[in-house]
Length: 268
Image 1 (cartoon, one colour):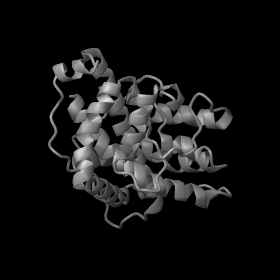
Image 2 (cartoon, rainbow, N blue to C red):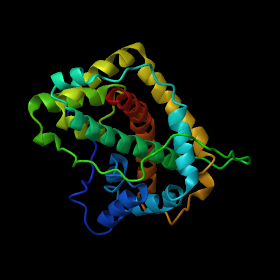
Image 3 (tube, rainbow, N blue to C red):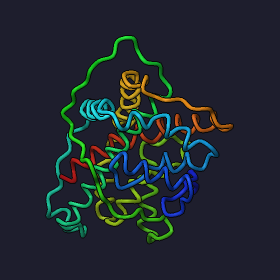
Image 4 (cartoon, rainbow, N blue to C red):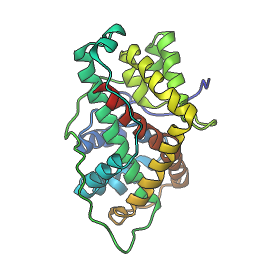
């Protein structure tokens, strides 16, 4: 089991320009969380304002919303069933908890879809022939969710489960702990059921297939919106920032989007 994880600035610890951009990200996306990719970019000097100002025009456009809807609709997911209330109640997940879990998953699925496409747009050139997309997937405009739980605040069993889940579908040298699992750690029972749902997909290779397909599809669709990126002067550590973005796209966001959509199905 990996014991190290990627550096990031927490939302509570952010100050100055970083705090202002975090607030702008939450407001613009209408999400209750600043996803880990942004909190990691904030640790690279000069990178956060450079990247955010480059892609913000995408986030305030309908084009990104439509492409994100298309992406979510076209990731081929396995057949999974909604967990009955009786199953959840046995592991101390009540109906009111299910509602919050759904909001958390909706928040992360929205953020991952939007971020994957917008950040992929940084690495591709616009195609000559753009396709107009009208997707049926509906994203909540504003989502409020509980605070993110620190690993050190969890009991040993829950922390171990979060780390085990983080390794599913991850590359061997990957040390990123997806924030989704930390947010769901309020309900260790749901994390346990998530493990039972995901481990067969890991062992069968389906999880890797979905990750690869999500990455490829996002790269293809990003070409439709890349011309909206606004490039500013590069910071000194621009290359490091782009490498971090590519790492997240390949190893984390492309993996966690299908996982989040699967868990949303079992949550009902």
